[in-house]
Length: 330
Ligand code: LMR
Image (spheres, rainbow, N blue to C red):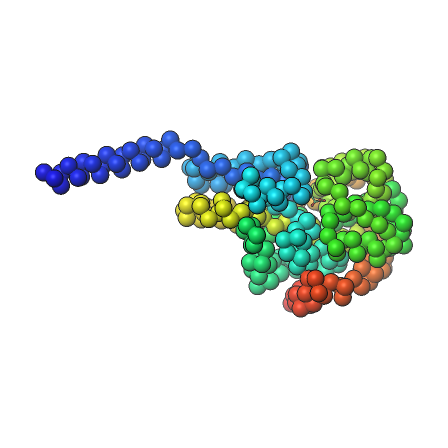
């Protein structure tokens, strides 16, 4: 008799738990970023949302806030640490406060191509960097691509001397400051959502960015020349925070990790496609002059800017820089 009552009670409890969980509020992941929806990061954010919501059967809802509508480049890090948002993917140059070694990615002419970069982030160096960036309440989950940066200004920049005396907007890192100093130019850290206006008001003369960002922000309306320099790399560290991550049930963690992995593959394809498309679109505007460097011109830029590396042997690590250079020859 007692065991029958126990069985009934147990069944009722399970039933109540089941009913309760089917009406439970979904867990919300707020993902804030500063670029447009039709960019590699914009697309990858939406793709991640779709995957997570489908695979979790609605137990997780992802809210993606694009174009800096929620937070700009700097506020986003504080919002993430305090769990106001649960996901962000700032560029490496904005994360030197989290780990100065991430400036590695901003060193000019360090990565030969995307394949070289992937061999680094997919290997031991990438694993170590994810570990060392996971501190002060942040958890680093993945590396997301955008692509190589190009220079824009209101003059053509075929030789490093052409940049002398100009003021460039930077994302904010010691490497980028030093890069423009080496060119005899100056730099100013400006949040991405304010870049267009700063160019329009002539607070700065030029900037560097990927083609997809240049096209989507319509920077071609306020810059006469685009030089295809491919001089530096722009990519993102996908971050969450420890208070969210440590409380996420294990099965949902697996779903989020799987979706991040798939979105990482997806953004690699999107980055190539959207940057290629953007070049065609920029050319077809007929507004901006696209300057293609000859290999001799590119070599002059390369020699000039690679001269910076020894200045960062302490901050980034000589060993790390050399290992990345070696990976290129493999
Ligand atoms: C920039 O600030 O120029 C970029 O980091 C924006 C972005 O997120 O791609």
